[in-house]
Length: 87
Image (cartoon, rainbow, N blue to C red; front, side, top):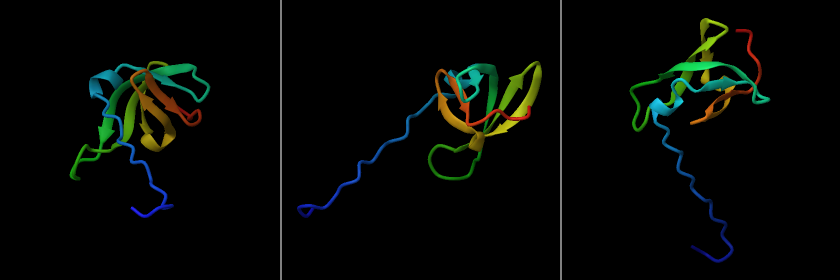
């Protein structure tokens, strides 16, 4: 590498076991608990780990699908939504 050339750090995505996300809290963008994550929906057919495309969640006793685009964070302690959805 030449002197003065900027390097980009490569960040490896965290591998998050499905079992740690299932049953975790579904939270609004302020951290308030609004439901529970019942299942994850993934897209199969590519290489590597399949990307998450959505979640099956329970909110107020009803199940609903939430797109992965609506999540700002997916972690062991739950899924945080970008905004409150009309569930």
